Amino acid sequence: MENTNCVVCQKPKANLECGVCHEHVCKKCAQFVDEGTFSYMETIPDMLKSSVFCGPCYDLNIAPELEQYEADMEKAKTISIYMTSDSKVTSRFSRKEKAIEIKDCPDREELLMRLGFLAVKAGFNALIDVEVNSEKVKPGGKYQYTKWSGKGVPTQITSRRFL
Image (tube, rainbow, N blue to C red; front, side, top):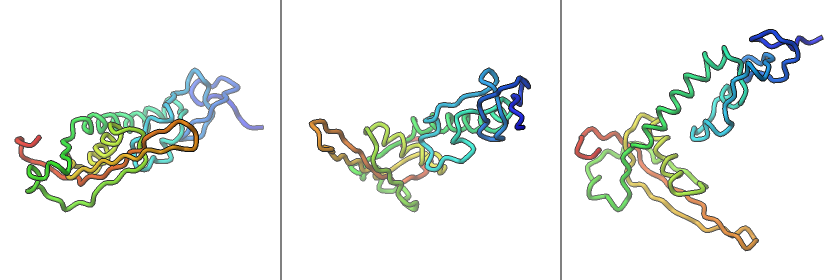
């Protein structure tokens, strides 16, 4: 017979399963993470795809990843973004990196935030030559919505004058 005791408190009938160690955990001992928490990551590691964790696995594996993710989100909010219309300002900036491209975003602000987040994850502090496009979609009914797409070249700006 399978042991269904909680791995933390050893109480019987633990219904939940930890996403990292796959041990049984009760509702009182479980640590929950919302499913959309790591949605800005390009690829979410298997360890972070679950939403239920036991206390030790959460403290050891998930909490540091969550702190790093939130720190990257804060950096992405302050990233310098230069649109293609700002080409006079950015004419001397390096364009060695490949452009980051995002498609099918629900709104413009989220698109810019996703571009900024991916640039921060790659170790850059600015996006140049950013193009933002919108497309109206009418899925057959009387309601319509807009899909946003965009791309930008990540770069590192060292001069305080441009930050």
